[in-house]
Length: 492
Image (cartoon, rainbow, N blue to C red; front, side, top):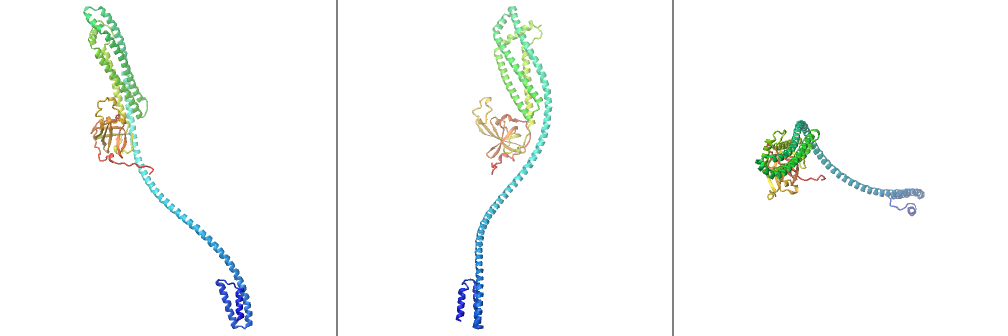
């Protein structure tokens, strides 16, 4: 038993390493149980031999086990290295997952913003579709207006033909007036001859004409000066009138010959009519001054002239082609009347062309930013808000046309038509035209914003014309000036 114990201890020290592994413990316990069994059943010699054989087998098994343990240790180390590598890969994967989650959140936010932009674009598309429908309706209205304009152009062509006929008549009248003017010049020469003959007649008259000769001699100097000045002014007046008359005919000819747009024709006619009107006013004032001077200086000569004409008619009644002074003045009045008719005709044609060429819009079509429009409105009421001209009513007429920086009177008038109403801002002389109940033609009007609401305005007085009364009921309920607007930034 002691030998068995020693063998067991020796075997335990030499062959089997003391490890904590469960497989080694199982083999040791199995070996000890087998030794105990052999000690009980076998004889001592046989048991020792068998024990030696078993011990050798156990040593070989322990060696193989140690090799396996070394391999397992290596596999364990490789597994641990793989585990650390996997842990590192897991941490990298977790960081990637966090980054992916962040990207997912940003992508979801972008998707939300894109959905909002999509809704905004859909609203814009719907708005554009509505505006497109409105644009198509406007195009249809413009087509109808185009057809109406073509018909108006045909009417203007007919009126051009009528104007051409009138021009031919005016040219004939001009020729006759020029002939009369030539006769007038010839009459001036005859007047000089008669004056020289009258000088010869004075020396051969009897004593009864001595008093007349003395009076005529006293007034001869004044008469000669007045007559020379009158002749000079008459000649200048006649040349200016003929020139203005030719300018009027030339303007009417240009309307007939040139094929221009109606607006350009209106501008040219406006410039021509203004020039003719200014020239006509100038020569009318000059004629008034001439008549005033004639009445002042030649009052004493009238009786002497009558007596001289009577004497000349008695002594020189046989002279052919005799022309008296009053007939020459009548010719001048005829020429002035013809020029007045030409200017009046051009003014009427200008008004007709201006009204026919431009289209009119309704009040309900007005929007913020609308410019260069024409309207037919009725004045309902007028409220003067600024009046600085109470102390300056005695100023001359030349200071009527004031600039916007010198506004002295401002009034707000409620105007409108059957579609709606709006406040009209009248300035300076426009206030006088804003009589309640009157019908006005507004040319080149525009919309001005005042305290977030619309106001209608016209720059110049010449663009406002008082028309004939027309019966229509103004829609006061649709007051466009009562609507408040908000300024919206396009970028927002």
